[in-house]
Length: 169
Image (cartoon, rainbow, N blue to C red; front, top):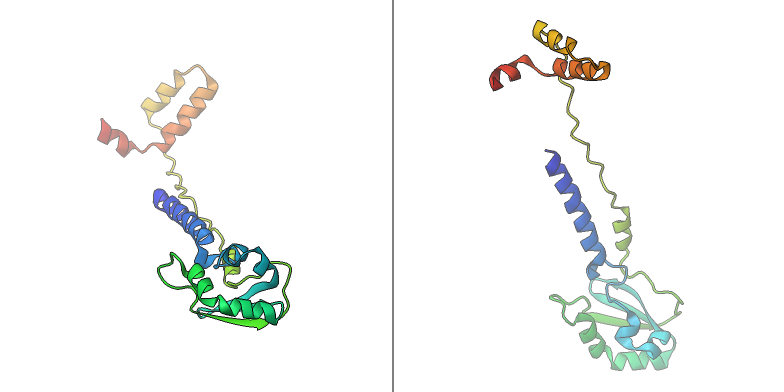
């Protein structure tokens, strides 16, 4: 039982690690915008949202909007390259403000931070009932000169059941 609980905990940690590294669950599933569009276009454009396979991008002005419109198909190919299913099917480009930091395209990414490790109760065994010592056990313990060893022996013998001794003997 204890091994099963430990296994579940390890599987949970493994799953969390996988989800954090998987691009579909990352804060920005597109990856690095600058690598996709190049440094110059990245300074003048920014992805704003990704919903239902539609990517919304804001650009600095109409010149950059025109440039991005001309390269839409190339950008779609780069984004969806080596993915079994396309992440983006349509790109909507608008003129708008460009924030200095990267936006979070996947709002569900915050949910990964809320996943908490569940505390698995340890499989504590209940104490076996204490029993009175037999005459033979008392004589055996009386022959032990060390007081601490005698007390330890007494505790151990009181926890052992007599049935276990008869079965092994």
